[in-house]
Image 1 (cartoon, rainbow, N blue to C red):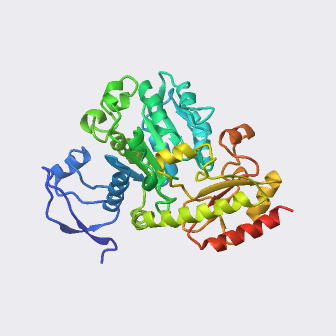
Image 2: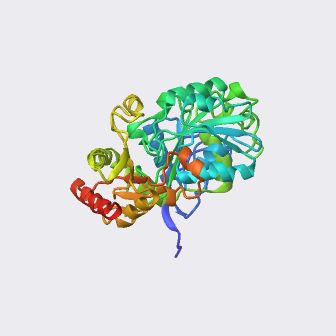
Image 3: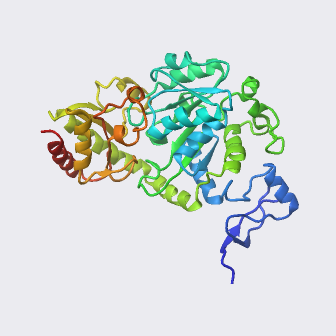
Length: 424
């Protein structure tokens, strides 16, 4: 009795036509029809599956759906959102190069850029703010991309994507956008000049706080061959992979093919097929969940804005929000269910509120069906200096709420009692 799982292998003939399905025993690898079939798959000459670290039929379905939602040419799913961010940068940047980034970032992304990539000789150049002109001033001949979060986490800023894309493309570098908070249901950065999109699928797309995952989406738009000197990794034979030339051999999806062939294949941040299955289930309900997320968030933001115990509220749906014109332009009036606010009493008041919630869950995550709360200065961004916190849009008292799907009255009751406990 074999302990492997019985599966059906839908292979390909050497000429790329679909072979007759045959039953096989499979665990982490897929069988080949013959030597010619194996060689063709390993050379990327035909589509097919061989080893689950690199590709898998279930992951392939998720990749196709994420690419279709974003309007991209191809996608790569990986083990986490941070793996997606890391692979996206390492696909274009090498020792001695730099990239330009808006400072309003998720805490782990900020730390990775500022303190980890520097040990590899890759410099993250943080702009003073999220304005295109600020980023443009930092570009030089060693710059390999501009990176932003379309909606900053937890700052809630909305980046003027078209302006930044224009700056990037005039300088001859690709524009990479983390679209985790907005999701492709609310915003498609590729339609506004982005060349590559990354996601933490763990958040809204998965939607239930059960499953890690990340994705990279190739827009297929950046003219790599026109910038051969800046990007030799796309225009010269790749010695680590059969001397393939990515821009020549895969003109519609060179970024994702290189990320899969060089980064994923050799460092192995592989997404479990079972995680893909769970993420696909989450994806099926994304559109309807976002409606409830937004309705609850609007009601709670309005409540917080009226409460005298609250010193300030940052919410993209308020007309007086400085980013509101960009919300109207890029999000068509919709808003993510992320609210940040501050209490009078500073850092200690923020901690007291965080400690006092009962229905809200004290979790680092966001985009969950459950409502979540975090105090960024003491958790997600605690490694940042005071000046770095200011640049990231985080004050000592900042509380970030990720509004879930519970009844809004219950959520407001919990906020009310926590405010009473925190503000005397």
